[in-house]
Structures are given as C-alpha cells and as structure tokens.
Length: 114
Image (cartoon, rainbow, N blue to C red; front, side, top):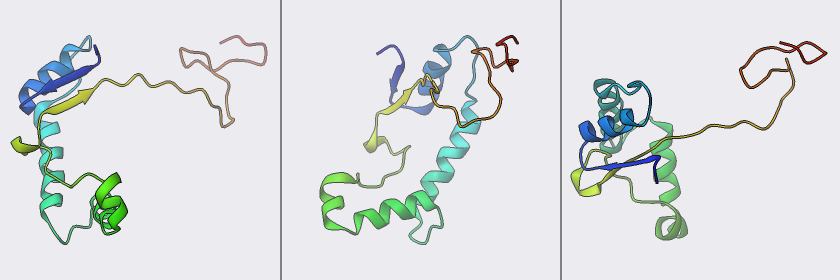
C-alpha cells in the first residue's frame, strides 16, 4: 500500500520513509544508532533488554517456539530482509477523562468553544 516502504538497505528505507511526509522526519544516523544498539542486544546472550528477554522466554515454550514467536534475528542482517517501514495514522477514540479538546487539540469550554 501507499503507507509501506520496502527496501534492502537502511539508507533507502529512510529515503522512502521521508518521501511519505511533507518534511524529512527520520534521521538516518539516529535510526541506525538505535537499530545497531538493538541488534547488539540480540547477539548478547546475557542481555538485560526486556523485549529481547521476553522473546527468548516465550521461545522456551515449545508451542510458542513453533507457532507464535519468530526466531530472533538482527534487523540489519541482510539474510533477514527486506526492511519494511509502515507509516502509522494514529487515531484515539477513547477518553480517560480530563480536559475536553477538539481535533486541533484546543481545550474547550463547557459550551464547546475553544
């Protein structure tokens, strides 16, 4: 679809992601730093990263290992590709209380005026 970018390398993925918006929002160097840090945790058998620990824990149960949980791999591993990015359109429909706002995030009076 129009909101998906599929590329073989991170530089191309970032260019494609930034092409989906009016201004370039993704900094390749910063994204690469985050992904490399995450990939390091996948390679570390003694990681303290909670997501990686949860994946490994789930895979200890045979049912989850075979059916539900993908084998952990490094995001930038070329054999695990391609890289896929999805532009999200976030919409909230619930209110947990607090100030009433309009779609422009302006606080409204009791009469509904900004």
